[in-house]
Every structure is written in C-alpha cells, then in structure tokens.
Image 1 (cartoon, rainbow, N blue to C red):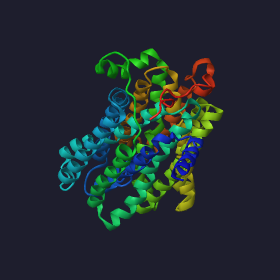
Image 2: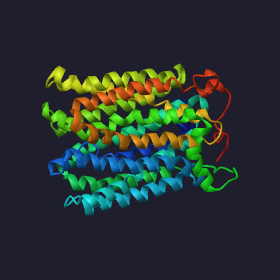
Image 3: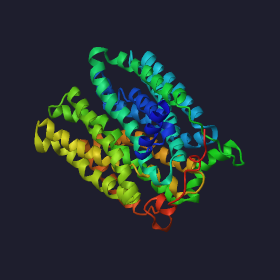
Image 4: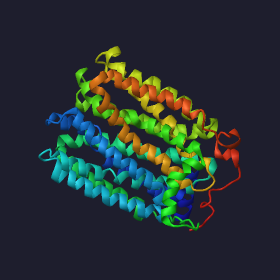
Length: 431
C-alpha cells in the first residue's frame, strides 16, 4: 500500500517537472528562505525610523549584497567540488552566526560598524544554502524537464523569501516586536535545513575528474573565456532582480508618501510575489515549449521594463486605490518570472563544468543584491525616486538586447531540442 502511494506521488512529481528524489530539499529551501526573508520588506524603514539615513541603510544592504555575490559565485563550484550538502551546511552556520551578531550586538544601539560586519557575514548564508541546491537540481533533472525543475526551485525560493517571509513578518512585528521577529528567523532556517539536509536522503556523486580543488574553483572564472555567452547570461541575471532589491530601500517611503503605510506596503510586496511564484512555474513550462531565450527576452526583459514604470507611477495614476496599485505590482512580479529559464539556458551552453556555469549565474544573482541598493545610494540624491526607477526600467530593456545574443548550439530552443533522448547524467544512477 505504502509503496503504491509513494509510486503515485513520485509519478505526480515527475509529471510536474520536479525531480522526485529532491522533493524534501525543495521544501527545505522554502522554509529556509522564509526565515531569511523575514526582514526584507521592513528593515530599511525601521532603521531610518530609528535615526539612520537612507544612505546608511543603502550602504548596509550594499555590503550585504557584496558578500551575497561572493557566496553566490562560490556556491556552484563548492557544490560541485565538495558536494551540495557540505556547501549548504556551511551556509547555514554562517547565516546563524551573522544573524545572532547583527541582532545581539549591532541593532540594539545602532552600532553601524558591527552592523555592517555581522549583516555582511549573514549574507554568506542563503546563497551557499539555496544556490548549491540549485546546482544539485541541474544534475538531477532530465534536459526536457530542466526548465520546469528550476521553475520549481524559484517557486519555493521566492515563495519563502518574498511571500511567506513578508506575510509572517507582517504578523510577527505586531505580536513579537521587531527584534524578536528577527530572532525567530533562526528557528525557521534550522527547520528548513532539517528537511533539506537530513530528511532529504538523495546522494550527489562528486566529480571524478582529475585536478585540484583550486583548479575546480578557478573554473568559476575561466568558464567565461571558454563560453563567453555564459558571461552574458550572468549580466542578464544581475539585471533580473536588481529592481527587486532596490525597491525595498526606497519604495516603502515613496508609497507612504502616497498613503500606503508599512503594513499596506508589506501586503502589496507579499502579494506581488504570490503572483511571481505562480509564474515561476508557468514560465518554466513556457520556456520548455516556446524556447528559453524567447521567454527571457520578451516576457522578462521587455515585460519588466514596461511594468517597472507602471508600478512606480500607479500611485500617481490611480491615487489611493489599493487594488489598482496592487495589480500594477502583480504584473511586474509575474513578468519578473520570465527570467526563470536562465537557470536552464546557461548551464546548457556547456557540456561539462555545469557547476562553473551556474557559479557565474549565481554570481549574477548575488550581485543584484549589491547593485540594487547601490543604484539607490548613488543616484537617489541626484535624480530622486523617479530617476532611479527609470534606470531600473532601462536595465530591463538592455537585458532583452543582451539575451538576443545567447544562442544554444544549432539555435535550439531548449537543451531537449538538442538532445531529445539524453537523460540527466545522475538520473540514471539508482540509490
């Protein structure tokens, strides 16, 4: 009976595009990222309300983004060289140390130096945990379902970071207070790690290729010389979520000026990413059918460029109409998912060293956390909110142009079109 149920469950997961052996890992990522995303929507206005300047807040998030970028780059090659579970465990440890230091030492008296150091240390955490798991997915998925498999990853990643994190914190800051809400994040990341590292029994076979670990790490750089289109993909990945990390630095204050308080903003932000996680799945399947490059270019680049402007101008165009502002944001969040096939397209550009290719992509994801707040810090004093939003929209249109140059061999739309009968190299290995 249990065997039949498990078989049916496996069949459902496989048809949905999720590697069945990694199902518990996906759940772990969802819960871990919920813990990580607890403060994203409100930390900047909270710090500014306690006396920090917007430039200091932007600097804090910028330094955080630097360490995220470094960890994102290392995640791919570390996962490939030492195994995803070891890389994920390292990320968990660094997250807990950074979080405890930030809350216990930096925040009580707004000691800016310790805040910078500990928040930066915290930034090493989630890229090593989540992006190492993404490398695991690229090895475990069949080419024909890779778009859907990474779609599921971004579904749980974004669902935890931007939806559950936002909605939980909107409740917790009222009932627990700001500092206790931050402390509770440690419980959630530990629970996520339990599912991803302990309940998840899948084995990752380390590469048998000759060469030192240092040589493997070096491939995280030399891969862009071997395949320059990987570098283009990395740049597009930076642009993908630059606005996502820029908006929380200044949009809460902009929205408050137009009548939307912190609670309303958190609900808007959380709802945006409910749409986003749904479309992460949709665009994963769309990419597998109409082509990864076309999906990124038109839905992601062009679509996000237009809707970034619409979201910003919505309070001006529609006044205090919560629902029209919300709908404008939801459109942006939905089309943000148009970039999901990047995680399938970029590793498919190379036959080997997919972990190195993913390192460049992950570096792009990490750099977005740095670039978004940096753009705000550098330009908001010169050109204001409106000027910053036009920069963000312009970057999306640039990403569409860059994507037009990223072709798979023989102009194939997906890796499955290149090798329709090829299995994932590890999918054929029984455990």
